[in-house]
Length: 430
Image 1 (cartoon, rainbow, N blue to C red):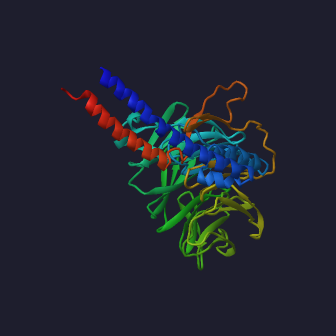
Image 2 (cartoon, rainbow, N blue to C red):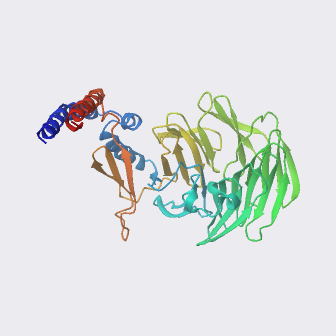
Image 3 (tube, rainbow, N blue to C red):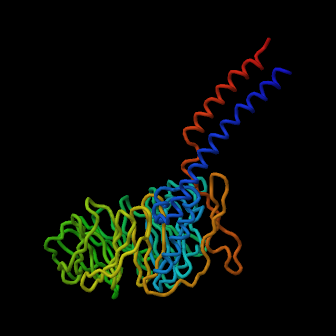
């Protein structure tokens, strides 16, 4: 017993330099971090590099700056699985739906607060995935009651229509569906670059719009549907083709503005804006060299994102620059526009932010609150102080990339060797 006690004491003493080396390395990091912070280093540096506690101070400082230029809030929750893949707006602009590859989320666009999550969050909770698919790659609103229709991410491809707690499912033929959009009780989607498919959610009637190599589909104000392909735009009224607009020089058209009046053609280092009615090129704006970036447009503003996390706003009237602002620390890979708002998503962290482009001030005074836990931070949701709301959101972030420096790692190895050596001597049989 005496040998075992001595062994425990020796191991405890051996652990002291390990703790000192780790704490010392952490202290040096904190000192360097504090010096840099007192020199007023740009918050973006901390967001990109994750320096210590000031990573989150930088988040708050950046959000304070961004609220002055239109930030409504961040759409991030602990139980949001995966990154935002698609976003769509209700007809009145008061709600937003996002698809994250697992569930669809409904948001209040005035406060950036989540209203509900739709669909099973894991495959184990899903009902017969081989029959009904799983997750949502895209989601849209339908009808005046703002029902949500989601297109499954995993096969088979199925349209899920949520009516309160009830779900109506419609299985689609084959794979390769994308570009989900809606108007009234109708949804439209592209199928395998072969044809457009329009579905009446109320009657489940499906109408095919044949258009080989099509890359875009949308509704316009009078209810017509536009399909887009290299060399032409087709206009449909029901199942009837009413017009074909030829395009000269639009080699890779991709995507419409939210009102359907324009479409985009990405080229090297730029994106071109074309008229859907005339088939003529109007103007172009610069984009990141070598691809990347994102873009969207409403009737008045084109928004583009770059690899440095900035968003640039351009006039749809003549392509002139309106303003630019820093939206994220990482490359912007998704942008979605409504008549007055913008959703932006950053590439690396999936950081999703909602912006108001109308110039209205942000009336929600509550900023995110960060609580320090060793090695982690706990983020209470920005809405937890609102009247009648309980703390509904807790997020954990790994706060410091330098907790275990080389000195600490070496100490851990030495302690392990000591534990093995003395433990073997103390506990081996005689």
